[in-house]
Length: 299
Image 1 (spheres, helix red, strand yellow):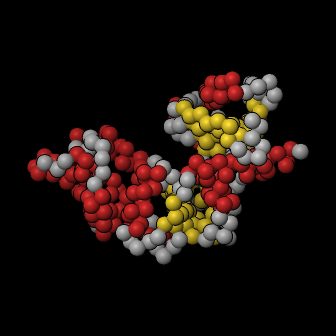
Image 2 (image 1 turned 180 degrees about the vertical axis):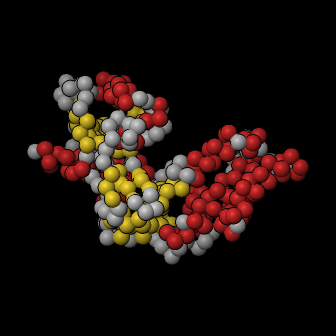
Image 3 (image 1 turned 135 degrees about the vertical axis):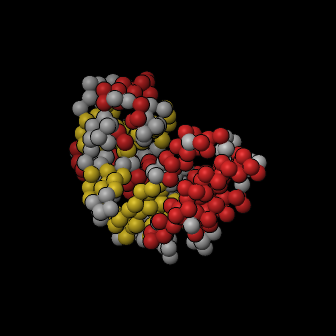
């Protein structure tokens, strides 16, 4: 092992032990996300997860994601779109108590109008473009905060973030709908119908949401169908707002497999072909490129 690749999100921490030529020696995960830590907790959380994988020498650590946020380990810079996905050249060096690690956090990307930011997704985009250098179109990164990113000439031209995933979590876990959607499972027909409804009537979203509760009380709407319709309505409203990004475009999806499958079905219903990718691979490809650049700069 020659270096450590780290993807530090709001709720999870993922690390890979890497060789110089990009081979993965191990992967470890924990729930020590940015949202659970204060600034002094990041280094101990990383060292605890790495355990005895570290030797006596100083190990380079390349981090993307929310560790570089204002509430994170050390605030990393933002670069303004349009721009190429910023990499190691602009990474922030983080002093550490331990001499066993040398930490760099990769920068994010900002957009002034409409105001928007990303941290972590730019590294996945960099990885995707490293594998697809001629790509011209839109990358959608479904998640808690879904990103729609216009790519041209290997640059992030513009992007827009939608809080669809967070809204689903809040509505299904903390609103009155939690009594109506407390079931796992999926209904393909219900999802497709709900996406179409959300896209066609986005202004009716608040009313449609309460109807899920009312249909459960009055017409025994089962929880699985209600949960599926909740997801479909929210994604449909998002697609209606994001239409200028995806209409007539080549769209690539990067993210959780199940969530990307839902977006692929929703976009497919609009006659739009989509390209599915491996999110872990995109993250690692972006981190590997950053490591190579940092090592070139230091030698």
